[in-house]
Length: 294
Image 1 (cartoon, rainbow, N blue to C red):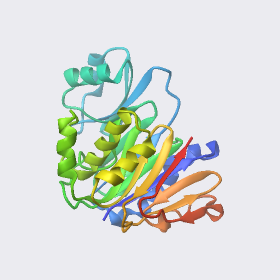
Image 2: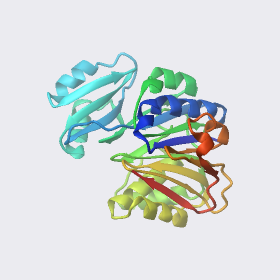
Image 3: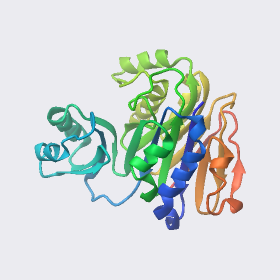
């Protein structure tokens, strides 16, 4: 049992409240996932040609200043608790290669022109405070509270899984054939960094989008290829999507209002959103794919 939440702001008036609203939603799902928690935030404002990289240090007291010097003048590092966000120009491949050479002990959780990911083990309330999420702004975000069922309780195994530029996934449920699909992806040159079944789905979606599918088509292939019980919430730079398996036994509720679209595992995570009284509230049906675009 895990808890997932997401908020896609249609109105710019909500952008300054994104972190606070997403935090209260995630806290409402705390008992669904006491092992770890994570947040993906999407925010505009980077100069053209720059990307953000969400970095995880191997432990407290990491030398971010020294890392910044090794990466060069084009790299700017903003520490956040024990982690950091790198802003750099150049192609993602070149930046990631330089990170691997100059700072091989760092983990890259996400990259893109809009996304930042923060995740850790422990209670959601502590993680939200540690990374200052309530003060953050943005136009959409995803959150996850994890109760581990099939892989280790570590920061790497926690959600969200961000597997391509500005693309990330949170998942409630389990996939029974993830090992088979993992082997197919490996044959195609795609490597997973954990043994978590959710990462396989995230890599699968990214692979098919990199080979020409849009998000809806890639999610359609998830329904065709993956066995199990699942609710997925997936975001890209400009889209926000929800899909459930053929049995739809993992809970999900959506609220669509004039100013936002919100999704959560349970309605109580949505109940305090501003304007919820005006929202159309519904449960997505079996194998329905719902996509909203900016």
